[in-house]
Image (tube, rainbow, N blue to C red; front, side, top):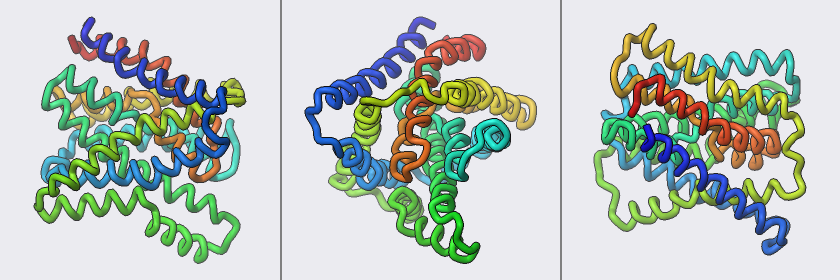
Length: 316
């Protein structure tokens, strides 16, 4: 259990270290006022597309379709998302994009940066495969839904036909969607990635998480993160407690799963909100401050909730 605790701290503390570095640089005014937005643009248009394409192109499609794992993890996200949206419509009313981001931040797990090392330490190579599958679901499906919802919000007020056309055009030009689809098509072709291309994708994609976290630190300068704390704590509770509980129910009671896949699905659902929610929020100019607060609060609290979860699952 000590190894698990060390692993949790080893992935949580660097998250705060990078955000703190961004905050200190912002306070010192070392970079220009638009540096955060420029860095966010790099993540959205360069680093994340490289990460999405490289991840999808490098994984054979047959390995991705582990249906019990997909249904338990994806079903847990869907139920939590719909529940959070229903609550937001009653207690945290806002424009369509704000309500959508409320639901997205309640389900978007930090599967890549935190989930992969944690599952590798806990379960070895089988845990890594489960981490890859759940990361694909998070990156492609959740982000795809998020882009659709935020594009709809952007064009709200237009006629339904105009909204449908604009959303379709937005999806067709979205770098995250395009890169993921291109990666899937390349994986389907069965061709290996040329080594220079694979290295480029790996180097560029690896910059996504630290750049996004650094941009969060820059954004935090001069902002009050206590605003809307009731909503922030509620979303963090959904992310850290409700999502894994629903996933556990689906895995054990509905699908009859056992072993590593069931535990991996639950752990991935219980991870804190990932930094990509900040990137998405800032890109569309909606829910930026709340998304930042949820990332911070859920990451802090995850040290306790993940530790308790590992004990309950019997992970040594």
